[in-house]
Amino acid sequence: MFGKRPERLAPVNALFERVAAASRQPALYLEGGIPDTFEGRFESLTLHVFLVLRRLRELPAPADGLAQDLVDACFSYLEFGFRQSGISDIAVPKRMKKIGQMFYGRVQAYESALASPDPAELVEALRRNAGCGGGAGPLAAYARQVVSALAGRDLDAILVQDALFPTLSSQESHHGA
Image (cartoon, rainbow, N blue to C red; front, side, top):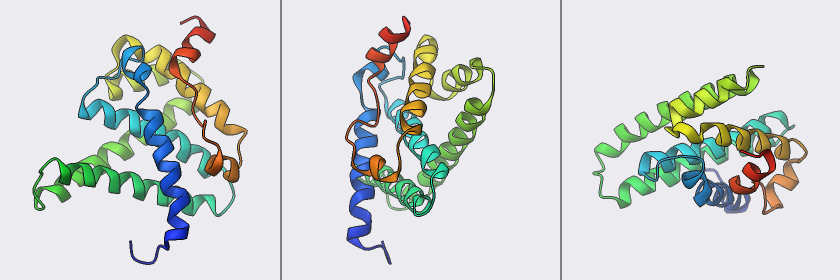
């Protein structure tokens, strides 16, 4: 990327790797009901990126720049995946435009649902977008637990702590779900 120094991108790429790894927790697919498909993995990644972006937006600068770099890293990862799967150079921009619309639509839906006093709104947003059916309740509880865990972290902690996300299964047993 033009104008982005490797030393600036290294922490962002490391953060993205941790976010992507968290989005692949087997319990998200087994107990959370997210389909184990390309679309389901996209939905899980989107949810996890959103949760980190939400916290970064609450922090002072330079967190805003880091948030944009995280989104850029996410889209680079998705574009690379399209190219590796054999999608033509002509079709990639069209797919990326659709992915971008889906990503930002999810971000709006999840932000609105988390801001709502009705906890059922997040459950419904996850059921509708992530296609997780009966796992939407535990997945919503997990998302709220992530929000709480991230709320106590500053930018340095977000960049260096390995365990940004709990596991869904420990979350479920904690809430008796």
